[in-house]
Image 1: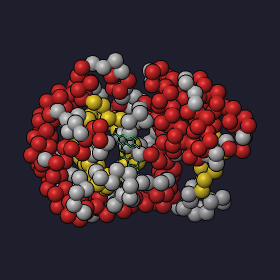
Image 2 (image 1 turned 60 degrees about the vertical axis):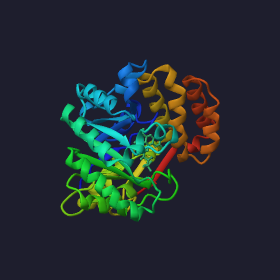
Image 3 (image 1 turned 135 degrees about the horizontal axis):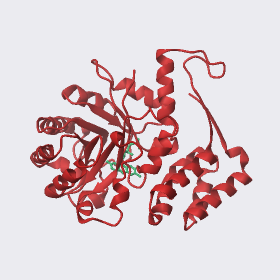
Image 4 (image 1 turned 90 degrees about the vertical axis):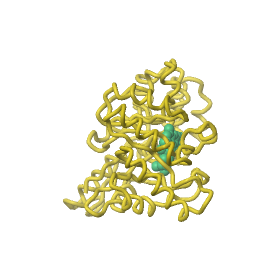
Length: 344
Ligand SMILES: Cc1cc2nc3c(=O)[nH]c(=O)nc-3n(C[C@H](O)[C@H](O)[C@H](O)COP(=O)(O)O)c2cc1C
């Protein structure tokens, strides 16, 4: 199997520095990198930081821009603008349930009208030939998911008829936010109802789990694409190790350390953190350094025994140099925390 592995759109996280970090583990492991959501209105208005949101590096042909916004015309104009840039596709955020987004009519609010969403996709189709996709949740969460699934199928079929190429389903309802486990069985059910590919997304823990989910959503001659969010920040090597595991399943090689079909990861967490900060300094504006570092280390520190303590240390710092110094000092005092060895 050679599943399509995708990095999820994540605000303040899915930017060039993270993409380059992931690529550094294996440049053939990820099929597409979704950007963090880009506000269509701000993009059209020429906000001061738009150049950073538009950075399509390091591999433009793997990049999918994600747009968010409540306004039909603005989304269409913004998509036309993005269409001029090198990229793999354009995605519309129809899944974000954060009140600040949803209240404006953006994100998951698009799921409340089949007609409006269909008109949007048809209009987007007229301005771009690039792969057009949406990212959705199971539904609003007013009814139980079983009852909402019929609506979801109707919604997705309309978008497909209007020219949509691809769907990512994060199988939780809007009400659930991150509570309760993702219901992957609905990814399989939705895939069986549609002609276009459906990627699953939600709660993948590590590389072995990623391979298991890719197998789960594959079937009927189709390889199911899988999207990873938070686990790719905690473990930027996740895609590389998953590829390794896939290879071992198809061409088993005995490993004296880990046993047949397993993979060993030996890595230095201090170095990875430093590499990330270097990339952050290189590609993001100074105004973003601290917030983006906090976001990243908020997940990455979960690899450490004293993770919460280190997060607090880093969060006290007011610039990237301070974060770097605190990071180095922690490992000077706790060298045993540097090495991470995992057997998959
Ligand atoms: C910090 C953060 C920011 C996110 N930002 C976005 C976003 O910009 N667009 C989007 O569609 N989803 C966004 N999401 C949702 C993720 O793309 C993904 O659907 C969710 O985290 C579940 O996947 P996971 O369990 O692999 O993390 C965000 C999630 C997190 C944790």
